[in-house]
Length: 283
Length: 283
DNA sequence: TTCCCGCCATACAAAAATGTATGACGAGCG
DNA sequence: CGCTCGTCATACATTTTTGTATGGCGGGAA
Image 1 (tube, rainbow over the protein chains, first blue to last red):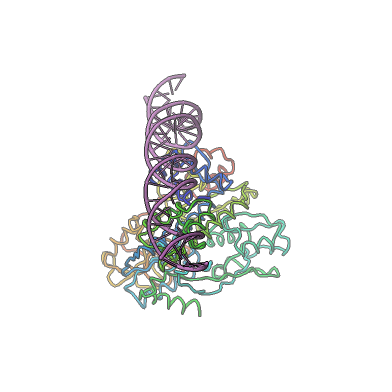
Image 2 (image 1 turned 90 degrees about the vertical axis):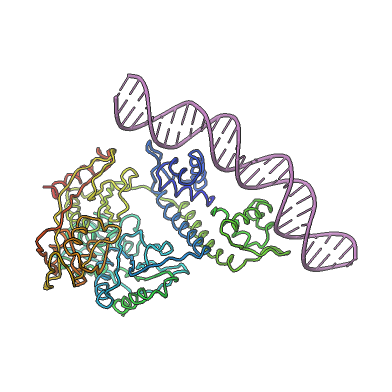
C-alpha cells in the first residue's frame, strides 16, 4: 500500500467524487480513479461503491477511513511539531466527552467550576468526533480509551462500574441463555466494547432489539421496554424506571481517562478545571 | 509533505545508509537520496547528518521518527484490519438525530417499533455528522434544518416549543436585563440558533456560564445551578429539578424534519418505521 | 423521447520519477 | 603516500505516473 494513496482516499471520501477530490488535491480526475483502484487492488477490498452521483464508502471503506484519519492526524502533528506552530486561547476552555459522561458526570463539575472561576467559559462538546487533541479541537478530552500519544498528557480519572439494567417490573432474564429476551446494545462500530461483549456472552440467545452509539438513548430504550441494556451505573442508577439486575456475573466496568496536549500544561485555567475534575471525580 | 516519503525516511533511519534503505525498499540509492531531500525541503528541516559512514538522525529527525513510526503503526493496523475483513449487515435501519431528540423523542418510538417488528435492528446514531443521505450514512435522518437535496424525500415531522428554564427555587431573571444572572447556551458553532439569539435578546446583560452542543448537558448544567437555559419543552418538562419561566416572551420553537434517500422509499422496514414515527410524533 | 450534464473509465501524449552510470569524497589499510 | 572500498550526489536514459481528450453511462429536464 502506497501511503500517498491514503491521502487520495481521504480526499475522495470527503469530497464524494473523483473530480472534486482532484480539485482539492491539485491533480486530475483520471489520476484519482487510478490511484483509488491501485489502493483497492493493494488492499484487496472495494472501498467505495460507484454511483452515478459519485462514490459512496462501503463498510470496509468506512473502516479504512478511520485508520486513514488517524494517519492524517499523525502527519499533521508531525508538521505542526516541525513548524513550531502555537495558538492562543483566551477565556475559553473546550472539553470533549461522550454524551452520557458529559451530561451525568461533567455538568455538575462544570457548574461547580463556574462558581469558583466565573470568568472562564466552558464549552462542552459531546460530538464523538471532536476529540483530536493535535488539531486543538478540544483542550481537554475525556474518554475510555487510554491515550497513547506521547504528546498528550493523560491520566486515568476514575473507574466506572457497569450493570445490566431492565425496566422495573420486567421479568429478569436467565444468565447463559437470554432466549426470548431482547437487548439494546452498542451500534456495530462499537460492538467490540467489553460490556457489549459481556452482554453477548451473558445472554447469548437474546435478540438485538436496537443499537445506538448513545448511552442515554440506550437507557431510554431500556426504560421504554425495548430490551435489557448494560449501562454505566452512574447513568442507570439515576433513572427510577430502571433496575439493576443480578444474573450471576457483572459486566466489566470501564476506566475513564482525561488527556490534554502537553503544550497546554501551563494554561492556568486548564490546570484549574483539571484540578476540580480530579477532586470531584477521582476522589 | 508526501506521506510516501515518510516510508523512505523510516527505511533510511533504520538501515543507516541510502543503499541499504534502497535494497530494503526495492528502489535505488539515488532515489532514496532524492526522496529524502524532497522530504527535508518540504518540512524545512535537516533530518540526517550525512557522514562518510551513512546518515545519522538529527534531533529533529528523531522527533520525526516518532511520528513516522506511529503513522506506520496505523498503516499496519489498517492492513491487518482489511486482511481480516468482514462485512455484511442484514435487517438493519440506521437512524440519525440529535442527542436529546434521540433520547427523549425517538427512543420510545423505537421501542414501540421493536414490539411490532422484532426482527429489525435499529441503530440510532446521535453523532451530528452522520446525516449525509446520498452517502448512505443513515437511512433516516431527523433534523431541524429542512432538507433541500432533490434526491431526498422529506417532510416536516413536528413543531417543538422551547422555553426558558431555571433551577427550581432560583430567583427568576428580569426580562430585558439579565444582569447578575448567568446562562447556559449553545457552543459558538451554533450561537446563531433562533433560541440562542432569543436568549441573548431577552437577557442581554447575562453572563455566559457555559456552552455546549448537547441539550442534555445544558439541561443538566441548568439543573446544577450553572445558569438559566432555553430548552426544548419535551426535554425541560421531564426534569423535575427544572421549572419553565415566564419572562414576558417565549423563545421561538423549532420545526423538526425527517428525510431519507429516494432509493430507499421501497424499503419495507424503513416505511414501517417511518409510519410509526409519524403516528407517534406527528399526530 | 431527446438532449444535456456530470460522473467514471480509457487511450494516447506529456511530464515526472526512477534507474543506470559515473564522479567526488572520506576512511581505512598496506 | 597511494590504493581500495563504501558512501552520497549528479547527468542522462528509461520507465512510470499524470494530464488531456474523449467515450460510455445514468439521471434529470424540456
